[in-house]
Image (tube, rainbow, N blue to C red; front, side, top):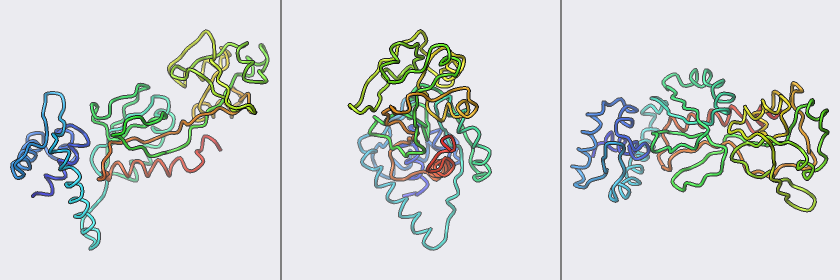
Length: 297
């Protein structure tokens, strides 16, 4: 059984795309297809269902996958034990990230990341929609929402602390709320996807359904509207920290912290054989953001 065929099969299982998996290993689509055919012939079973749009594992493929991973892990461990083989991250890593977070906190780090990993190429797609990782052929998705798909694995990159804020001009014109209930008397800018603002109070959690004239589906735009004095809004500190430093925004209701389990996660398909490029990306950004992210310092 050819280890290169096994390596290709494991990447096909992760990407659901023979051409993409092949390109990662330096193989043309026809050669990649031929390697999968040879692996199936050697085993005497069909491992992959092929369609014009994507591929998926057969029942036998799902059963075979952990054994293929185990073989490759054993080979890599054996090579590492005697100092043989290179595990340098290489190829193209496809990443999807929320638009605002990607622009503000991933793009500025890419120069350093590429310098540390010169054999890697980055394909970064930014969208505020939750994309299908398998359908899109992504290696990693950056998300700040809880993980609901049991076929995926998540690693925490940084915490995502959220606050309530307003511009000094808005507070001067309309006054500052002293308690969460006071928000009902104010114009609130709603970030689409967050239906309630949940506050920790001495009496327990208080849910406030913020009402206002404006709803926006992008954190940066919500922040900018708040700076312009449109109203009060909820914002992640990673999005608002510069405006807070410059005095364009002011945190309010500090005595009533928001209840949130939101963090910044790196999500990837479940597999015991984690590609070196995926591990390199995750390890880099965990170190880059640190235990206390720079936007909270």
